[in-house]
Image 1 (cartoon, rainbow, N blue to C red):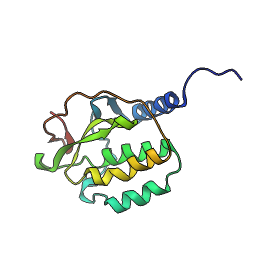
Image 2 (image 1 turned 60 degrees about the horizontal axis):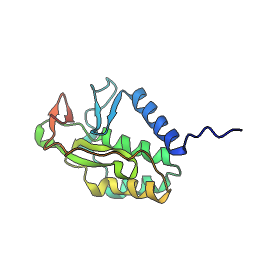
Image 3 (image 1 turned 120 degrees about the horizontal axis):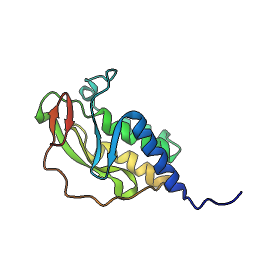
Image 4 (image 1 turned 90 degrees about the vertical axis):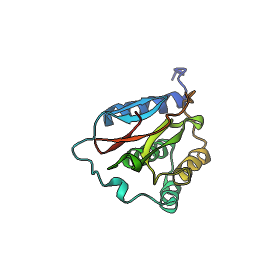
Length: 151
């Protein structure tokens, strides 16, 4: 079989972009945002934020790069529910290692420590992906229609 010249990283990025489109996400170097919440989504997702320990346990059970990337994306998406602007803030993504976008508007409960086990697992599996150059982060996030977004 002839080598197509397409790297495995490119294939992973293509799969991730296809998944993002399927989920209705808009992926850009500026981060990941949702056009509108799906009807089946629970607005109470941020009422039970994951702990660092629970994310670490989940991350340890993941055995491939795509699963780690999907869990990372789900964490960022599921933790964007809000009821007031004070519930939201901006966290840096981890696109420097090929995981996620530049920035995310999420619940104030999501910290670097909570997502760190997934980033560490991505590195442990020697995963790679597209690396982006990020503009300055947004100064704030606001609550709009029950979701944290950047203005």
